[in-house]
Image 1 (cartoon, rainbow, N blue to C red):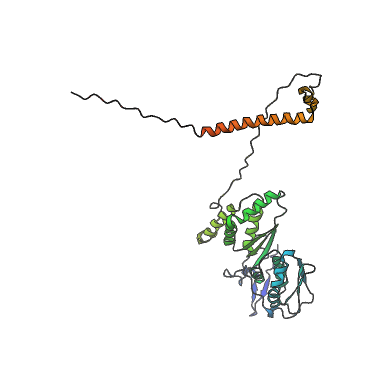
Image 2 (cartoon, rainbow, N blue to C red):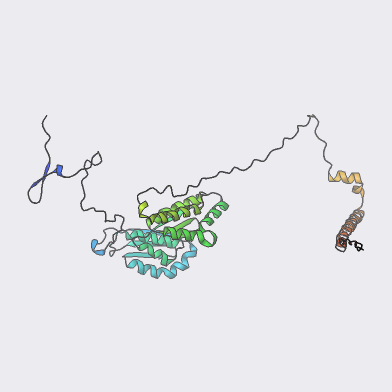
Length: 345
């Protein structure tokens, strides 16, 4: 067998460098992988680099636009703040249009737009404004590190009363639960109607969506809040950076409490009789028996008045007896007199 030729490359100096000198990873996955000397540990791969105008000096060849509708009650507010929205978007080269007749907001790129992702940020801005997010908070979406997520919760629970109760759990008493979620996830959360609008870093948005969906599926947010508090404390310890945190996190078991079944009392079977039961007497039959049917209207009224007076007399006697009870003196225990002992001689 002939020996396989060793592939070689030429260095900048002109000296050949054999590939055997370059260390390779073993296994199928590392067959074609090479070392990357420029990729050091101090580089943050998750950092979002700032996009500058000089990176894209030429204008876009096509125009991109997004539109969204807004409810009627937001019309007055949007009309007041639309000047601020126009000035904020004009700085990044985005044009915006407010159509009060159709009830819509539109954003589109212009010849001055230099950041291609800014049109998506502007789309998120008009979405948040339509979902009752105030303008100072909504304008933060134009920053690179901030993203938004609109969670739809209206179709998770069918029963309206149950939906309202579970949505109220997200807020908590005096908004305390919502405030705790905002502090732990570093996100802004706005519960409005059938949606929840969230703004913040990507990692926080992921946690917020999980908490909201679980809350609508009958898992209380306090369990996730406890878990996030423990994770925040564990992250401060550098020794636990590469260890699993499962042993520190709480594991809550779901208890399915079945409702107690009502005991159905078995009724005794009656003897079978082929004859139907006796017919209940009607009102006319009862009047015929008592002779009231043949009486004149005036006699009927007189008889009804007598019955009414008798009932009034009985009721007045009962009430008088109850009043008299208040004047009955209570039985007092008379102290027993001690007999004086005869004096000693």
